[in-house]
Amino acid sequence: MKNKNTTLQIRISPDLKESVEEVLNELGITTSQAINLFLTQIALKKEIPFRISLPKYNDETIRAFEELNLRISEKQPVEYSNVEELINDLDL
Image 1 (cartoon, helix red, strand yellow):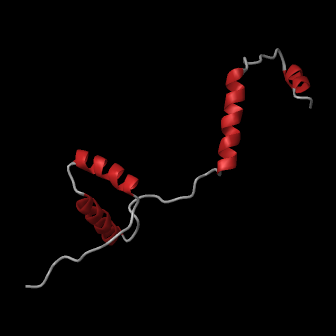
Image 2: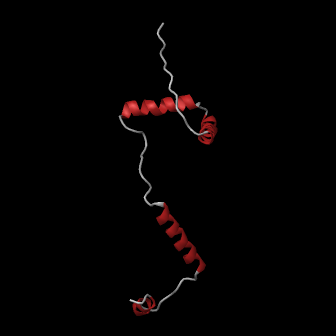
Image 3: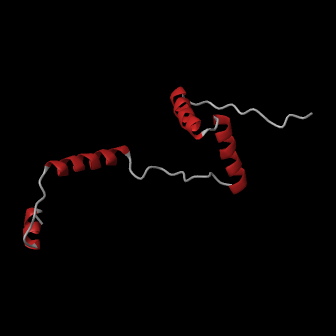
């Protein structure tokens, strides 16, 4: 009788393995079953079954946004009576 399965070995960090197994246990499936679902979807759809993309912003930009948000949160909002006051405040 011919073996209908093959073995696939992958290397992942122990922390990732633990995190994944916690979620999969709650879902009631094994890691092997989840990987089989993933690979089956690739075979059926001829694509990765989720979007893969680079982050929109690099770390430096994210830090700048965080700093800006902190500065904004520390200040009281400024109200202007007209556009001229705003322009003067912006030194334009």
